[in-house]
Image (cartoon, rainbow, N blue to C red; front, side, top):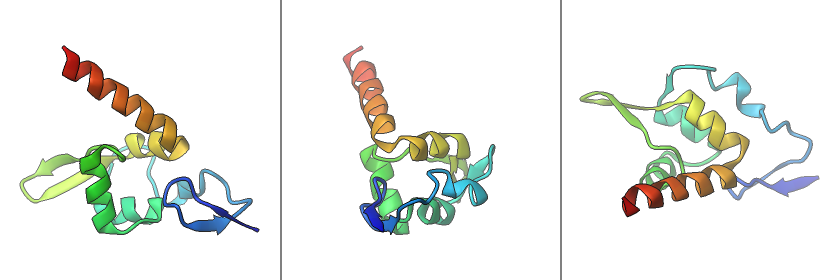
Length: 98
């Protein structure tokens, strides 16, 4: 049976573990855009767009030409995308109000 993925909006097989990304996402450290796109099931351009919109965690600059995401931030997002977005939005509002 196919169900709609809450992350990408694409269909996926039901019964798939919510931690299916475990094999591709390290417990600690950083991951590059290709890995983020693969574990989220979205295009690279969508990763950049969603990051700038606050729908995904923000990347960090590791050097002049290297941008990556904290693996822990992505795990938190993948565990609960809607909850992460709500928490991220409320943090941004609080910082803006100060």
